[in-house]
Image (tube, rainbow, N blue to C red; front, side, top):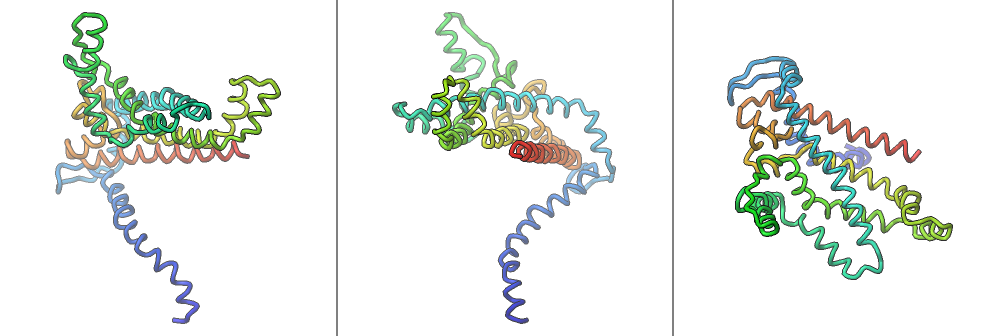
Length: 291
């Protein structure tokens, strides 16, 4: 082999370890999941080929639609409640004259450091039926014994509130970084021209942070559609009457509790296609906005 050929081969040799790991732990499982989605499983070693029947059954499965509805409710809460609060906090903590703003940034971001298991335990302690912190606080305020079962009747609002505490500070960091890159000269020029705070935000700040805002929205949607750990730990499954059932929870139950890995693979591929479509759609919208 000539020296020129060895030099041309060198980049591929450096890439080889990654390609091997990627092939063994990503491509091979993906290929296996495609095969599994065409089979109905009856245990670890028993299966039968069913073609696209898993996908046909999924289209008429009321539990799947309930999981989709619950997941979309949680996603709406993440986008329309969590992100505006994160942006508001970022704008507040970006003010130069605010005392203690660095400490407050750490305080609001710190829930990210504790993890979802701790969050689920805390949420359980707060929303317990009789001894929960929330019922005890309401009892102290109104003087009436309250035994309201939050985790049985208000599951999705409880999950949204729990995620709010966890992720508002996380998304705040993205918005804070974007706000610090807004051109102050444009803001000052708009102020000199008589634009009020609202007008300055709509005409100067919002267009400047739009790329980061689009990324944060996409990140929140993708993360919400993959919701699993919080409801599973908090409700030990999907809750009463499957009120906390999500798409990934249903996938887990189908594959590892029911034992039908074929149907679970079909659910996984439907979710993967949905996530990919959202990511591609966001890229196209961002490209059109920049054009």
